[in-house]
Image (cartoon, rainbow, N blue to C red; front, side, top):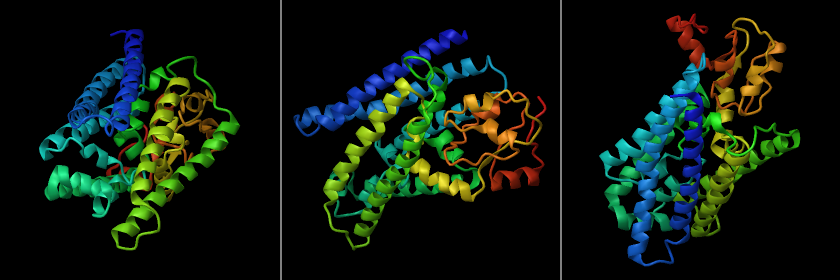
Length: 362
């Protein structure tokens, strides 16, 4: 398949995904409480099919199209790994696991703390959400969902401790991560790529900590409620407020940024990303810049979706350990001299232990 043809269909598929996301999310969150029970059930089934079967099909098809684009380019190893990882995650989270456990809503609980407090709400037997799901799933179904939620959080934490933010943001994220990687070559949907202003970047740097603070507040509130020491306030109100936050500041804003700017726009202020970036700093996540030599082509900085001045760090002989780094590896793939590499303490130990070379001779 020709590159331009693949890019054309990728852009069309992304537009279709945005269109159906808005329509189906509006139906699910806007009409469920105002239509008849039978109509509400139909809307619920449509939403589940969209979030599972439709999403799996879309990710696999568009990963294939992106692969066709990347195979025409040299040294796209990390980007290809991202595509394989996201396709595998989608198959398990939206297909195999829900089928095995007979619960098509389990993907809700693949949103780790402090990104979403839904898992904690399910742990709180006094919450409205727990009571609703108890009527639908029974005690056994709730137990399975809680175990899945706890395992998901553990997997994200352990993976991040080993390979940094790359684990969640470039392998697992089924909200924005998979979109940003699979459709990376077609952003923005309309217009040309724009350079972010310093003032906008400063705002996003501040806004992500605000978003993290709000998410940590939700997490703390539900934890206190679970352990029998509730903070004053209404859990039902907080649950509704979190849904509004998700629909406005996350889902709709995220898609708006796809249209006018970049696929990684939400990653600039994602509360989970901000939290994992702090962990990544502790475990030594960085981009090494001294494996070979630099020819000052500046391609690494131009390719970085998080607007990190990698070339400047290279010129100073310093590693890149910016908190915005999602570990996508685009800068590493684009470097013509292979002087860049992704590293954490664990990856460094692994390479030393098993004599795995940083720079491949290919």
